[in-house]
Amino acid sequence: MRRSALGLALATLLPLAMSAAEATTASAAFTPTGFDFWVDSSIMGPIKSRVFRAADGNTDRVVYALDGERAGLDLSGWEINTNVANALTRANINVVMPVGGQSSFYMDWNSPSSFLGIPPQAGSSGSSSGSSSGSGGLQILGQGPGKSYRYDWESFVTRDLRNALHDRLGFRTTRNGVFGLSMGGSAALTLAAHHPDMFHYAGAYSGYLNISAPGMREALRAAMIDAGGYNIDSMAPPWSPKWFYMDPFVFAPQLKANNTRLWVAAGSGIPGAGDVSNAMDVIQGSPLEALALANTRAFQIRMMSLGAQNVTYDFPSVGVHNWHNWETEVSKMIPDLSANIG
Image (cartoon, rainbow, N blue to C red; front, top):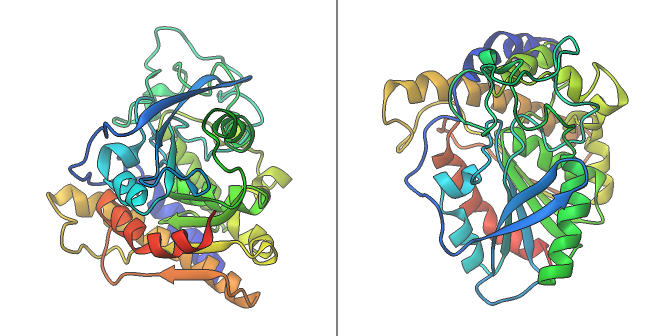
């Protein structure tokens, strides 16, 4: 009954909440202390990441920061909207921010995104820039990342980028950390579960951690159409091994068995100080955070049923789906992250 009620709520509300970009931005911007780090993917071509070096110059302590559903092609949302890079580097942690991957869930897709087998149309109402604004309903047949080629993000992060960081900067390839918000939060747990040789720590803020709950797939389908015009069926067929591979609720036993250190958080959906600059902050951010909270609580129950002791949960009494709260969550997490990587 719990899963059915959760799924029904998600199916009803998530497409509405996802109709806008991750709500409310902070006042940060491009960070001049970071530098562009380009790595070739055999499938996706050249991919940019932004790298921020630890204050003490070490190469052993590394964390990857994953973006949300509307990731753009110029900078990560973490750099545009927060100051987490400065906080992490001051804690002597190297930061890697992959750029791009709109609606990808940072997975290796089964095929390029398309609807009814129709290839992307030149000159159609699509976006090739990874724009983070506007509805994707008009971009279904448009050009863009992951449409003329297959998304290959999991392999890129865990092989190509990982090896290039080691070969060119000397970064350690084991006992790394990874965290993300929303889509990136789900992906952080997925990457950590299936690549324990690389990731010893994972953080998920406002993530989708129970994607096989009834109605959840169709809710995500609507969200991915809105965020760039992507087809969820091109990512993973329904109820396939690949789909369950992506579901934290399903692979929770692996996280326990690997003893991966986790930080899992979601706000209440009730606006707090700093959450509201206009009415749309609440209209957009509150329902989506409430849904993320339901997903995260379901994951918590799953882990507790397994007797897992490797998770820190944080459920603030206030907070909506926005960068202000995700930046705050990183600040809370840094001491635990620092103690468990490198």
